[in-house]
Length: 635
Ligand code: 0RA
Image (tube, rainbow, N blue to C red; front, side, top):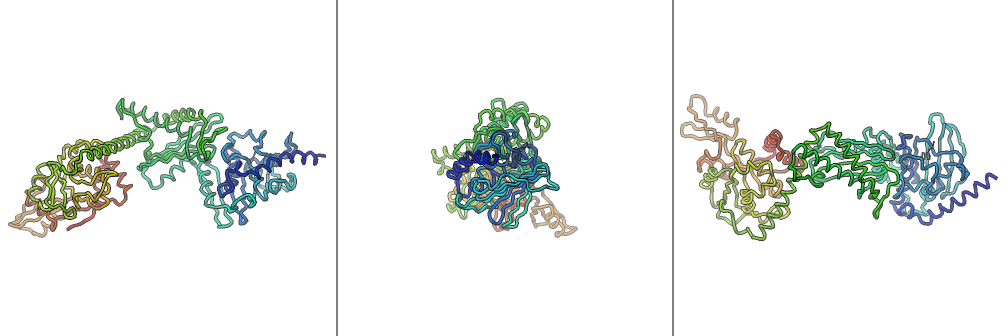
């Protein structure tokens, strides 16, 4: 009679699974490749649930040659006892009843909603064959199914020597249902990797019997390692990702974040291990909290003015964050169900992040200051870009193109291919250059260095600076997205500054300007740095110029002992008369000019960011490094 009862119950159950076979897309989204792989993730998710509840630390996924897949875990094992009202084993309930309830709801973080969490019964319904093995208290049980129908009730098949408990499910996707049944390593692997990051301490083994792949994914520090791996080979701030965690009843949140020197934002959020590509309330809560904490602290530390605020954009620049949230009953929204909708989550995440981040920054004040400074740099750059756009717009509407600045001593040729522009530091050097040049092809634009230098740290002021405006109009090629090398009025743009600290500062500012607003000028190889000599050596009627201390030594040695030698050290271009300037620095047949190159835009960008900060040491380091980056030309 027990047999009768069992059959009667299972008919009702099978009705449910028949519906899954008739309308598979209702349960797994589609019957294409994507739907197929959902089967694998569905089974894996059940094992992950067990891991999240703290009962499992190892999961193995095997792709077999016949496209069947095995998922093994060392959790508690699906209950094997007979269900009090259904009269069948817990295993059979799990495998044949849709959204098995009751005992199954006592899991701490049950994944539900979206395409996941439909239950292993859906996988069973859509499999040609499925075998489940459960070990509980060293006893091994087994049951087999065909297209969701049990071939026999759960039976005891033996004893395990070593394994106390666990679950093993092997299923073969039904080719009657799916357009393709080929399980792809390339789809499974990244997801398993990700799961290892999201579940610190969980060992995930992946075997593909088709390709011979045999790997294990494991992270001791979970999402901290996730962020570190995303940031591999990048300049980061702070050196170690910030990690915060908040665990309450039915609420688990951990966040790892770190900045890099780039501009893009990479926030990867997950709810119950499911990636929420379109974000949602948890992401909003996090961003709002980060913004609030940084603004509050920036005001308190007086790093920004009372009426100034760091915007979301400023704070997001270069940010990488992983948000790992586990809650009961997540509501997934949107076409692809990839956005979290639970309204209360926003404030819960906001409060948790605000509290934990504040605690973190209380202990790591330097990290806090550096992050705020980085956001301020981002803000300045944004303001500068806006000013640049406005400047271009204004320029276009007033048509500046015909009106060259009064300070520019232009050359007579109209052919950009032979024309050169010397940007010269200081009015007096500008005067010498104007007199010494070959006016046919050499134009001189003197810049008032002092003014530039004062505003060095504030790049967004650069574009309102009259000297820079003159420079933009002289070059004629426009800036930012309007940059057009065809409109460039010169084929060589040569920066000529003094060989002292001020000169280096001004050169740095100009390079920053060109990098930010006329990158094409550097990339196109139009930008050069002049090399004025450091020494003038005179002996009798003969004159030498030395461009380095080594060269000076060599010349003195060459002149030999006994001769009367006069050495003049040039402190500035202004000390040279026009003839000397021509001979040493401007005459194309004798001068040395160095072409500025950007080998790696990213790296240069980082340096420029450093240069705009208020630290002198990295700026000096850049200038030294940059000297090696330029190459010899025109000797
Ligand atoms: C329900 C209750 C319990 C465990 C599980 C389900 C379970 C399901 C799956 C599916 C794959 N692996 C699994 N591992 C466990 C708890 C049983 C108990 O209280 O001992």
